[in-house]
Image (cartoon, rainbow, N blue to C red; front, side):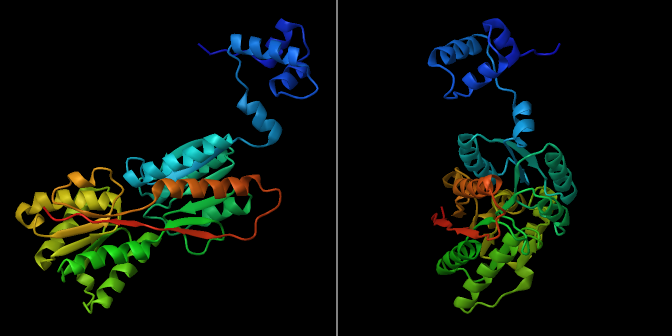
Length: 338
């Protein structure tokens, strides 16, 4: 059974007005009398009239929709980014369509192509851990689709980007572990492909260098799918434990929470002896056991800034040729070991 909605033609017929008069009244045009506007609006509310977005998009050649690509919505960080995106988009008359890549380049590409075929006005993208080739995004961008990257960004793509200060966040977290007396600090991180992986590794290295602690490559473990597969994360933790780390700096939300679980599963006693600092936007950090010093990213703000930049591109009357990379500060939330 198909749901039928009232149209402008239905309202015009019922009120004995022309469709153009009804259309202008609904749009609050100055040439229509207040009396006619009230009549039309009252009847439109009575029959639960809703403007046809398809007709509007065909007329204006815009869909008033924005596509979002993230690895997974369940990730605390990305869910907060999406909240920020929606807070701006809806206020400016745009709907959002969210797709998950699940850290798969193939799924990411399929999602993007599907969104593009639905005539979205613009795209907000955080790349998957597998993504190395972004040519398919370049092709869409070259054809006029506005794209803004956030968090996980490509290096050589001329458009707006919004990121956290990954270097400083990593430096601060590693320095905190060092000042707590730790010297054999491991680093658990994402795929080597990602921009955040490279930037956070450099912050970790810089903190070690400042305190004259030698960098040991064997203490760095990469999780190519960002901890989405528990076996991958558990294997990384198993490889680290024989190296006797007294601290672990962890580079992402899912890895941080997952590492604590893996440590407790593999060796509960050791789990409480290792100091942990990691990126996470979880609101339950104070409940973690063992305790965790966290690096919080301004996820909500990141979503807002990225959306504002994208809408600026969408609504620009002329092609935009100057782009910026916005770098937002992180916050180190220290937690004493229980």
